[in-house]
Length: 216
Image (tube, rainbow, N blue to C red; front, top):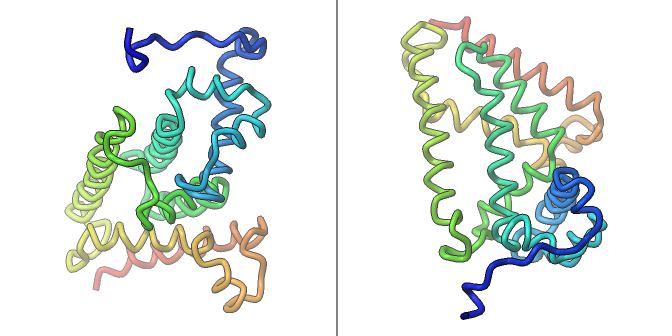
């Protein structure tokens, strides 16, 4: 049988047998730090396995290798953001929710920066890689459509473009993670401190509330 067709053998790691879900979580927790710090190309499965305290074979067993593990992380982040943008939730809460989620999950946020530099799995490297971009685009289009419906309902001014507004909200939410040096220079504060993160989330919410109330 060709090597590419051989079924994956279940590893004998005792931790996997005791608590497979916890083992998966440990791998994902280690992986998000590794990918966030070093990007996809610089990340190493061996370091992820060592950080998670598991045999590297488990990463292939659970995630079908490095690319599959990366896709699992991207899917998890999409789940986090989907929970924030629930229909009917006020826009100011959504904006603050993105800020808080980015602050709590800084390594996830850094994945976006690496992605913007093109550091992602190559097409064809994993079955889900070729579908991931379409799922991401569909998710964002749904967010734009939700904003368009809110605009029609009078939540914000008719002269604002929903797509550009969504882009601005993403930019505001990601600024402390992507531009920490700018935070320090403008505000002379630690962008990683809980006090700053909460104050910034509240200020973003206030900006959006002003936007919603200013219909002139």
